[in-house]
Length: 309
Image (tube, rainbow, N blue to C red; front, top):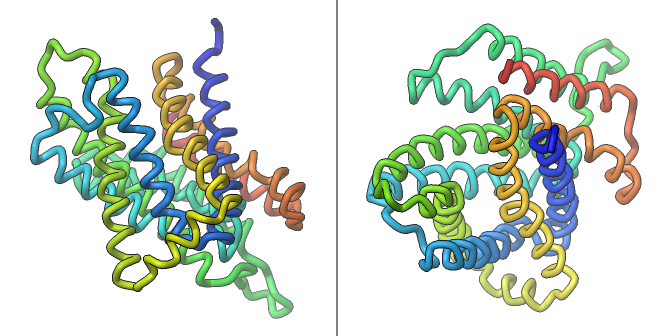
């Protein structure tokens, strides 16, 4: 089928849009920490079931110490730090602006890849960073009566948004390192295990995320809130759908998309979430959306696309 990869990539952007909306509802209802713990545990169940069905083992096979180390580091930075910031940004500034700050992930990944892996920073990448930051600035900055720029969002929410984008970007590079080590440890005749490498790697990252969030919950003495959250039927339904549409369906479709089209095309289309989320945020959450914010979101996505040209 022509344009199958492009169609799947758009489906990923829609899936992640739905995830962000559910995550905002769940974070405000259950709390960001509680939402993350539940989501990580549900992710482990779904990923484990997938691995078990296809490989006969519910946990990653052949992953050596180096793979576990780097993927665990990725889980710590991407899930524990990044998702903690992301879900708190949903509480403070909503999923629409939270997803806008996620366009910082590609620039951060480019810088982290340059520092950690010696990857080249092209002029397109540098231009993409500038355009992405410009788009975010247009969306979140106001010009006051004294003609000075000021934030129109709570500073705490903006900082959480930046932390989410940076965590996602650095976590992605750490995942790349871990998956390279993992791939080298898989026997050449284990084709199914190799095909499910991204799922197994995500499982390891989710283990670290779940353990980390549980430790934070223990330090803050909030275990009792988890029991309360589990008995919140509506909250659990929201958490379940946020997990299905995000770590499960979203990841699965994103892996499928790059099999049918170029990675740059797929990545650009999947980065449309900040644009797609504008209408449902207005319709479901009654958020006021200005023309300038729409333009800013579109410019940020254009900035992301420059990384893959």
